[in-house]
Image 1 (cartoon, helix red, strand yellow):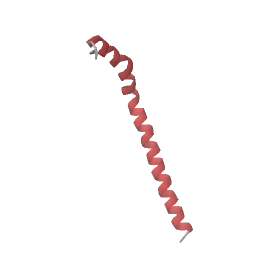
Image 2: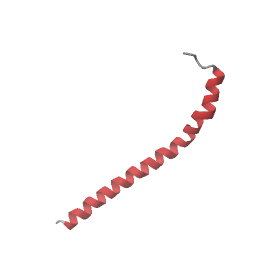
Image 3: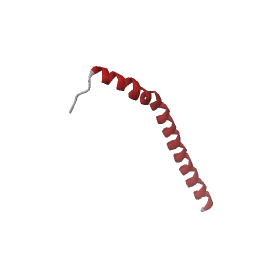
Image 4: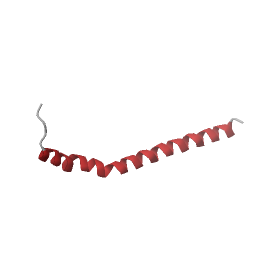
Length: 54
C-alpha cells in the first residue's frame, strides 16, 4: 500500500475535507430541527388523542 505524501494530504484536506467541515454545522442544525419537530408532533398527537378519548 502506497502512503500519501504531505502534499497529497494537504490537497485532500483543502479539496475534500474542508467542504464537509464547512457544511457540517448546517447538516447538524437541520437534523436537529427535524428531530425536534418530530418530537413536537408526537407530543401534540398524544395530547390530542388523550382529549379525544377521555
